[in-house]
Image (cartoon, rainbow, N blue to C red; front, top):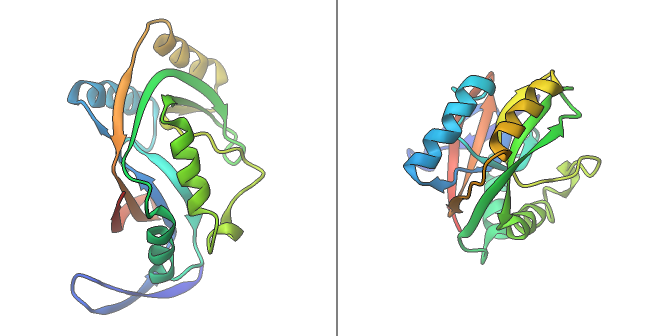
Length: 190
């Protein structure tokens, strides 16, 4: 991984370290819905203790200067405004990178707006980092396992009853993810 130069906007100091940049959106949820999602994640998602429930909008970009990345995200997110969504079902998705299977909550309402935001973020400087061989589905991950039957049981337990988890995406967090540690670099308000 390339070492890049980063400037701290808070302290106006210069420091150097490696970065693995992503863009995530931590949705605003009711406390009850948050606790329901976290209970499932705690039991079935290894990222539970690393990152809060989130939508990933830009996946790993290890070779771009943070200032350029931040500027591009700000530019491409401009004019979107907050995105309201509603989850009404869970789905199984194979992870082509890890070989695991994921259980995702996927929004009915808000789906197209999240897709358009994702596509906008990847339309300029980030275009070379867009994995076109992997379909993008807006989601919040609740479980992951190499055992597809385990994931199927989790998805079935969510889908056997009607539910509607409503939320809003109003900010994007630009994060660095290194050695299973998340640090927020910048937050962009939609």
